[in-house]
Length: 168
Image 1 (tube, rainbow, N blue to C red):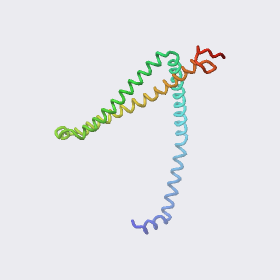
Image 2 (cartoon, helix red, strand yellow):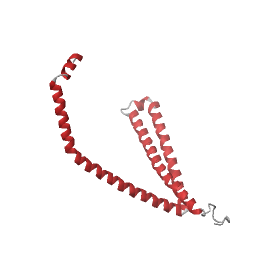
Image 3 (cartoon, rainbow, N blue to C red):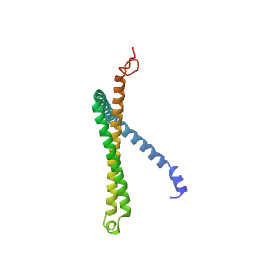
Image 4 (cartoon, rainbow, N blue to C red):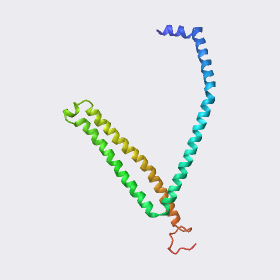
């Protein structure tokens, strides 16, 4: 179709009538679907709000529990450090698998899917490392908040640690 044919087609009454009919049909469909979509989005919003409130309450309860006992705080710290090491090792394995996918001997690469298998393995290692890093970040935030709350409980109203002789 040339440019002149296109202009002739767009300027024809048939084109304008088809645009008008399409707009009316789209408007009717939107009117029919709008109520159902509004109900679905309202339910999803309520569900998300309830789930988020429960998650915040659970996190606050965990922070309270960790801030009460320094042993629990130390154990949580050890679990986080252990998880960070596992995450780093997983990322290192992903890098090694990627390197091996490109420098393996011909007999390994020539097999059907040999290089692809190594790249998939690297992708799996990387995903495991990144997901555990994300989880560890949330745990680290909880532990930091528990440590802050513990320090604020440990200080007296005057701001000095207990037993230093500062009077209120």
